Length: 364
Image 1 (cartoon, rainbow, N blue to C red):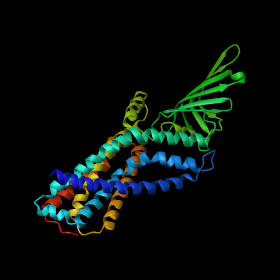
Image 2 (image 1 turned 180 degrees about the vertical axis):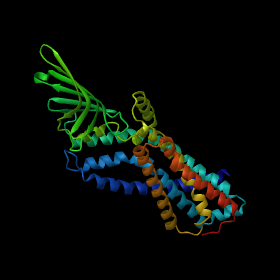
Image 3 (image 1 turned 90 degrees about the horizontal axis):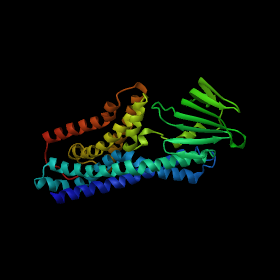
């Protein structure tokens, strides 16, 4: 049986790699075209856009790996069916469930790849891409660090962190520098957001102004901030929680909970990553009932189309679940696992149906 496992695993993994290469190439082209709208802003040119796209590919790989796994496994199993290998296996007395175990093993071998890329490669490269893009578009950014950003605008220096789960920003510090680089005032805001007209508004702003003989303190509920920096410079900080690793999401959730802030977006990202990894072997296993069932005699184009349809449906369901979790305040744990749970249910029902009507597969 080890020979059977190696043969099926090699066929499926090779097909998945080929499909993933095609998908990443197409997605890279689409991303590069999308970046053309930013080319010419500041010093952001086509070379910087290409760099941004290339650095974003590892995160794209993790995001679309379940789709590639489904299409690749359908194509690989279809090739085995057309070559009568599956017929020979069944004729040799190998049951469908044993073939399914080999297929599942191929899916499980893809999980460490997704975990390695998603945990250690994609987050820093995505951060690097975001920082590079923000710096090229906003030349007045002087310092950028993970989780926070600094920008100097004339006599003002602004520091911000993305802390709130609703897309706002916290940890705002504003320093006003006078002649001779003398500190004139220090202000702190509980949060900040971008108003409808594109201006900045600081929430619960407290300022201490340093005068020659005294310090004047004051507090306002909302303080309008006159700064020429584009709010997009905050792209250098935390960004989308879905782009963070588990190691970063855990402390972020603990920080938000300790400060009484909304952590649903981060908890959804935390569980969604785990559910996404679990979906990879399930997507590969889905090829078994289709190969021995309705697609026994289908051509490769039909299999690829079916895989693409299922993959797009999976992707759209994930996006709908993500937006619903944040917009309607639904349970992040339940909804993060919903797509994977539906996929597992579909695979289980199709396999049970196939087992009930098992018969030797004919060559395509």
